[in-house]
Each structure stands twice: as structure tokens, then as C-alpha cells.
Image (cartoon, rainbow over all chains, first blue to last red):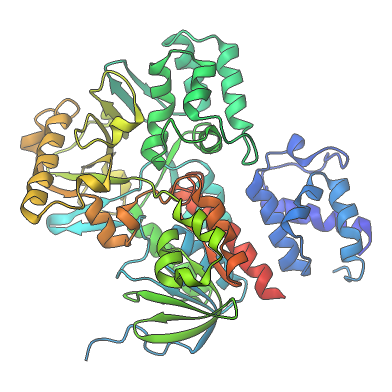
Length: 86
Length: 472
């Protein structure tokens, strides 16, 4: 997957996790938490969805990489490079 | 020959979940949904653990712990269960406080508290905001030495009345005290007190029924009347569970039994490191409870203005250790109106009085003293109810009491604990898989994982770890 495809995948996951949030104006550089109401369970759900959909493992010590869209995509890039886009 | 509750059970499962409290149920559901072979074992004949109810002749249905969970339940039920369950979560609007320091009614959300603290308690708006923001911003990794008492003292020095307003419901909900770490208050508070108090419309029986349907749809093998006796290990790994004299193989175990029961009775001391055992032995179980169940006659009704949750006390000041005393001064009345079960044509009004209690005051009484103490609990509760329900004694047509012994009987929790363990239980629970590969614990621990929402969410957190292990 390219970084653009990874970004689209994350948006898709966020839409299921936070259906009430409008993600069209999401600023990739800013922390998710400053832009939408996400609690620690929501971050866990992102991790679980990544594993379910793409079999990507995110160990607990790496959770801090998921703070913003930009950091999430750059963290996932090497892990997802061999995964074909849907 | 007695009935075989394990009839046609398989020889091996990916996961065996021991105990069907909300944490166990949720773990079983998530792992079943993910496609694993899951066996759920419950020692009682009903699923739900402390999320339970009972029926009595003449149409009375009593809920044990239905009233008063946080808004977060809605999201967790939608995501980890289904929309049908989430759709039945509705707010309770009448929360009443009545004690020698103040009497007030609130919808129990941040706006209401901000308003009350200004108008009735004379606190500056900036202080209130700072307090709410501080509590909300608290994190598991923050300083654990600051106690809840010190937190209140910092923002509202000398104001025992404000402490009472902000703390009494939390103590009722999870057994925490002013001596517990402030972060436990902050984390619970941010979940609990910003958006009001909720209940499940339809009753605990309907909720657990819907959960059972969902579990079955996800292929979970559910077995009641099956008491797991032993978790067997080999080379530091989970191997099987002994249940009703049978050994069932498994790749992992999620124990929703009490943490100490899991470590010391089901696994056994010899399987753990010395340091871990020391930490485990130092874990204090939380207190237990007493409850008195009271039903009104079929023609009678309670005025809606009475409220849904009544935090009442005759104690001059608020002290959490007094809340545990057998000399009861504080009672929480949950009032159940007919809309608790809108489908039930009988339209019953019921009240459940809850009080935190110590095992020592009940566990060792002989039978005669125990029965007398129970009767005294019922009588004094009826006296206290009089103020909120005029002529209560004549109008209540059915009464029954539950004590720490009752909670022990149904849940097998050490000392009848109704809120799991104190704060130190959480790291011990979390470290279990580092001691025995494939063994996890999910259930009420460390106060913040307590209550219906805490239990469900901890079940999710643990399922995530199990999934990670099983996928390898």
C-alpha cells in the first residue's frame, strides 16, 4: 500500500469508530485528540481494526505513534508496504 | 444420572473464558466474532455475574446493579456488542442528594455540577473549571501518591460538603475511598460525571439475553453450571482447564473469576515467581455490599418526582470509612419505575437500597445472628425509606436482603467483594500473561476497571492481547 492508500484505510477505520465526526477537514499534522473526541478505547479500536483488516500488529509500546494522521501513516508505511490495496 | 452440562463439548478450544461477568462476556464475544473457537464457562445457572436480576412470586423482578452507569456504555455496547443493545441505553434524570449538609437534585452532568457548585456552594467558576479539567486530564501514568482526599483539599479546602457531592456517588459505584489514589477518581470521574447517569431500558434480564443471542450468533459455546476448578499449565504455558471433572484443552484462558481466586486457587502458587506472588498477596479486595429489595403492591405507584437514584445519609459529615460501617447512616436508593421494563404489563414499582459493607461484619455470624442481622437491616432500611416514600412500611409488600455472604454465594468472589480489587490489583492482573503464557485476567480490578463500563472495556483490552497471541 502507498502512503495515500494507508491514509484512506485509516480514514475508513476512523469513520467506523467515530461515526459522528466529520473527517473532511482533518489536519494530518495535528493530533487526533485535538480535532475529535477520541479516548484510549478508540485508539485500541484502531489497533484492533488494523489487525483484523490487514493483519498488522501494533505492539503496546508503539501506540504513541498513533497520535496524528501523519505519524500513523509514517509508522505504518514499512509495515504495510507489501500489503496490496483493496 | 445428573444432567451433563458439558454434553458434546469439544476436546480443544482456542480460548476458554472462565466466568460470565460483563468482562468475560465481552471477551468471549470479541474473540468469537474474530473467528476463534471460544468456550464460555459459568458456575452459576445464569449469565451476567454481578450484572444480574432475580424474580420473585407475584411478578416482582429485582435488578442488582442496573441503575447508574456512564455514557461510555453506549459507545462500548454499540462497538463490542450491537446496535440493538446500545439503543436501549437511556439517561436517568432524577439524581437526588439528601443529607444534613445539603439537599439537591441534579441531572449529574458537568453543566449541572458547575451550576450547583456556583449557586449552592459558592465556588468561583474558574475553580470549578480547573477542577474538572484537572480530573479529566488525569492519566494512569500520573503521580500515584496524591490521594483523592488531597485532590479535593487542593481545590475545595475544608469543604467536606463539596467532597460529599463529588465523591459519594463514585463510592457507591465502585467502592473507592478518599484514601485511594486521586488518579482513580480522575479517570472514573471523566467517564462518569461529564454526561450524566444511564440505565438499560428493558432490565438486566433483557440485556443479558440480547448478549447471549449475540454470543451464540458469533459461535461461542456457552456452558452454565460449569465451575472451572483448575487452570493447568505445562512449561509455563496454559494447557487445559479442569471443569466438572473433565479436562478441556486450550491455547489461552481469560479468567473473569476474582483475581486472587484465579492465582491462588485455579493456578496455584507454585506456578509463579516469588516477586509476583508477593505483589499478588498484597492486593486488597474491595469491600462488599448489602442490598435490600423492596416491592410495592400491584395497584400502588411511586411519584416520578421522587427521583431515580437517591444518595441519602444521616451522617453529619462525609467519611468514606463510615460508609462501610454496619452502623448504617448512608443508603443509596435505586427507584425502578415501570418504564424499566416497558414490555412488562404488570407495571411494578420497586426500590433497591444499597450500602457498602465489610465481610467481617457478616461472614462469621452464626445462623441465628445472621438472620437477625438481616432482619434488622430490612427494618432499618424501611425506616429510612419513610422520608422518601410516605407510609413505606405499609406500602412495601415484599422485602428481601442480600449481604456479603449472598454476594459470595453467587459470584464466589473472595469475601463477597462487589467491586473487585483495590488499585494495586490492576498491575497484578495485567502481568499475569508474563507469568504464564496464554493466561489472562479480565474483571473488576484497580477501581478504574470497575463497574459495568470498566468491566466491559477491560474485557476488550484483554481480548486484544489474546488476539495478538493467537494470531502468531
